[in-house]
Image (tube, rainbow, N blue to C red):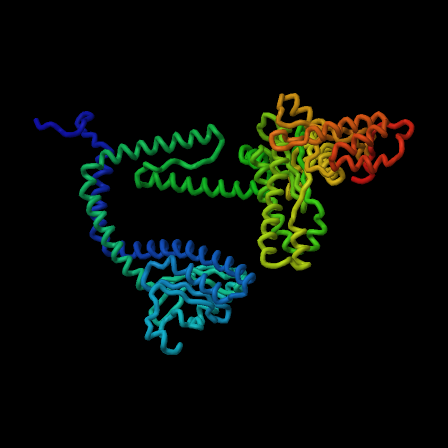
Length: 576
């Protein structure tokens, strides 16, 4: 009796599912070879066009960016031809096919520049424009009026970019375009369709060869591929389970995965995951990190809040009104440069942005895991102060470079003074309300409490005492209780803010690793104690000796007189 190659249950042979899949798949694959010449030519053509579109979009982005940069250079130098030539040179870098072109023209069709992959022969350059049959570097008008009319129509509808088909004497071009406001032109990157077809024929031959090798090797490798498919399913499941456990959406590792429908599903999941993470990234730019994390975890945002022990950092740009009046709309660019560095320092030190109000920024510490929220806030305060000083130094250096050739005009001097940003930072902490307020249609994350207002008042005092950073006793105590010796706190004054009945000690936190002058502040504190006791003669003497700008405040305050009766040593703020 002949032995069956398959395991049997009774008289029925059990054919492995892997063998069924292998036989069916190989049969279909062999059958597909007979139709490949027809199907592949159409599918590959579309794939190449899509790929070329992707490449052209990236190249158009480079051209568009170069156009924006060159327009700024044009504004500065006034050399239009050089700027246009620079854009054209940038466009030529991405050409790969013989008739690749990049062209820019305005809404009337007048060409700003036209760059082509194949340079125009010298004898052709000597001909007149009417003798040049194809779109090239000598062309002055975009010839396809229908395509131009369609682009103008889209622009009126608010559509500034898209795909384009147009006709030239060489044949049909396809490509992408984007409207550039500065130049008031459409920037187009296009390929000749017949060039793409030649590439398609080459690709067709390569794909056919690959298919032949796949069919030849499939019988040998089939079973191993099937096992790999099952392994891939297990790996995908394990990754999804890990995401569920961590409550964090990520992507599945497909680096060693086979090219099958299971991998396609996983790749689709990765695409969706990336989209969601991108949306979270966008959301996070408009909301605090902790709010985004909570929304991600709970899948909703509610109107809620609670009392929390937090630290608030308030930073404000000094003389902002003058800077706004001097710079006009350019103040926005200056603020963006400033905030780009400031917000990074806040985030680097475990803080979240509570709000940005014009020239002022409120940062909150303690909403995320932190060893010492006061230390994080103080570290960020000094880093913010330093990056602002670095920006001023760059402006000073730029002025020196200009003055090597000429003196600044009166207008330039005003602008120079306006861009020399200086800030004050106030920090306080304590129990505050932190949460979401508003309505179901619109809500915002906020922090409310006396200590929030106090941080703002402390920032205002930096202008009076001529100090970059002023903090409250809460900050001092939390840092000192942690045994941190990097910062040494010097008492500056005892003030009673408007609307309050009690005085509050304020401090200057000296960074002993970067700053000097402790002796001067020790003299200052000695003078301050005499001031508190009402011994204004001794206070006056010591204030003059300490050589600190803040001392001038007290010298003006006490003048040449003596302390009044019932002197408490507390200075009352008359403004907020």
